[in-house]
Image (tube, rainbow, N blue to C red; front, side, top):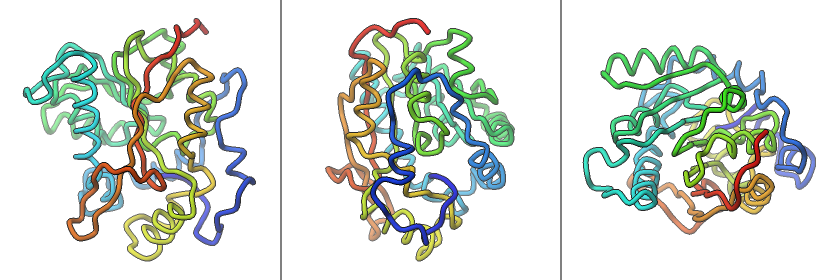
Length: 276
């Protein structure tokens, strides 16, 4: 999910795409984009409606949960098929929205924290967690706020969020400092390709009308190679990269080798992270 231009803005190499790709630097800027906050605040009430504005995320969630569960269990020597394979592990969901992914992680046993810069999202997430009896700590803040407090987690999730931040390099820097040594970072986003423009912008917003027009900004999508370069600047390396494709006949998503639209990354530290 992403930001404020419309389908009339056709794919063009460079321009804002180049501006948004991860660049070297100190990574110390704010990651909050006020326009994105305003947009998602307007949609906050729809988070838990499976056929509403966040329908694609509801359809995507089973694939995300399984990928995170299985890779985490393998990394930490757990049995993925057990009811709570993440027991004893701390988890942070950055840009948690209404908690669509945070809640399943908590039910898998993780000590879960969800953060979002949109206050209304946090209110919705807290309400739903209370209704379902799920223990989660939800905080209205940005990733850099937890970095400033010195907090770290075994598992950090940044799913469908990097394309919304104001400063990609600062965001990746913050993520690198939130993962404990030996921990895991999971990211998901969309690649900036002609195919993603046709499917995520034209198809999802204008033809199928799954999402409100302007939800995505193709220029802010990030190619896997760009993400990998940005992560390496902060001591992180992509250990696994997988595409996520939609099957219209079954109305579901599945893992694939196609990285041209949606993709997920399992990320590990390649070197000790230096203190800020």
